[in-house]
Amino acid sequence: MKINLHNGWADAAMPIFGAACTFAFAPFALFWLCIPILAVLLKAVQSVGQARAFGRGFLFGAGMFLSGTYWVFISVHDFGGAPVFGAALLTLFFALFWALFPAVTAWLINTCKPFNLSMVDSLAVACLWVLVEYVRGALLLNGFPWMQAAYSQIESPLAGFIPLVGSYGTTFVVIFCAAMLASIRSISTPALYPLIFVIAVHGVGQGLRCVQWTEAGDKPISVTLIQGNVSQDKKWQSDYRIKTMRNYQKLTEQHWDSDVVVWPETAIPAYERQVKEFYLSPLEQLAIANNTDIIVGLPAKGKALSENYNRALTLGKQRGVYNKNHLLPFGEYMPLQPISDWVMDALGVSLGNFVPGGDQQKMMIAGGYPFAMSICYEDAFASVFINHLPQAAYLVNITNDAWFGDSLEPYQHMQIAQMRALETGRYLLRATNTGLTGIVDSKGVLIKQAPLFKQATLSGKIYPVTGMTPFAYLGDQIVIAIVGLILIICFSLTSLSKN
Image 1: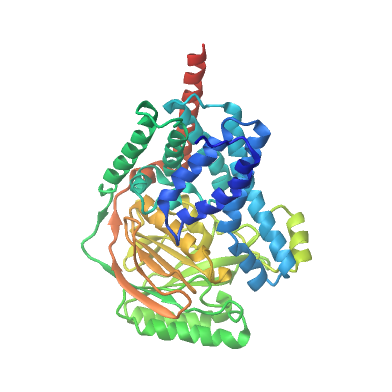
Image 2: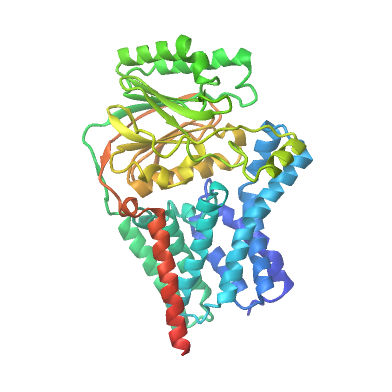
């Protein structure tokens, strides 16, 4: 039976396929769904008009982002204080805005018409997809790389490509495989060659998973991660603040045998200058006396009155400071001024106002080794970590995913953190307020995790790592430049074949 991709039923199915794609990501991790679903999308946009191709891409993106990022509603309504209607409207706008990117990709693929059923065409499709993804994930509004195809492949054979070419390069491989499948027109031996090739690509990826790109040291670092499980609606209440700080100190004092203890983002719900004398200084002296380094998160004031930082401190033998640099748009700063301020005021939403810490910040040291630090959303960007390689022996991310309640977001965020560990070939420590707190090894495997929405301490051992993965040498920008070069070659070959 031949499926008609030109009728309205195919249009109506696009949001369903987009929503189904969410199941390829954490916590479901049905990675094998991603490629065939994307193949259906590519098939659906190849032989219709440009407007219809754009519409199908938009409907697919709407289904994917509404199902995959519905947790924006929880953040804005439950913790941001917006009314139900306003929060729902903002969440809808958020999802539909990002749905424009699959729409633009579909339009470009249809317009360029690289559908002569050759490998060159599949490469061109993958290039177009990745270039649009890079605009979404790294350039526009400080970047939003959520729901990027490569993240769904953390546990698949294609994960072997991640240390080689990173998330964008692996997305290229995923889309290339989907385009090859989309080129199949009949069940015959010649027509199935693309399927055989896709299987071969997965075989190569599985082989790459066995390659050890970096080298772990012999002496482990003992670590403890503290998950305070402090309710977001109580966290900043003055009468709850001291209780929270005492609790974190009490949990830490039970683990003075650890080399490194990590607290979550803004674990201390007060500005640094407010707690420096009576809390931070005595805590640091205890850490030094017990030969332990503590990494804590808290807000801090700068020299100017409006200069606020989302900060991490190391307390111990070597005091260190890191101010979050890659800020979350509409969460920690307001782009598109003054329109964004007007919209948020109309919705009754109050959000943070921070400034970036800058690119030239000194690397912090804990447990005797320098490490690459990130706060919350920063772990979605490879450059935050690889800019500190090869000096950094391990990675640290502190975050507060309590803003998103019991949703998909904590699992998706951990999957993103796993990507960074695999890209760099280094262990990663991730301490969160409510979960997912976990230890990730240099292969991107979550080897230990604390239960969600429970107060917990998570102890284990990691190994300092030396060396560089191929991707750590390349970085996203060089990978994107290579993708752009491949696209130029593909179109050049296509033009030559027509002549």
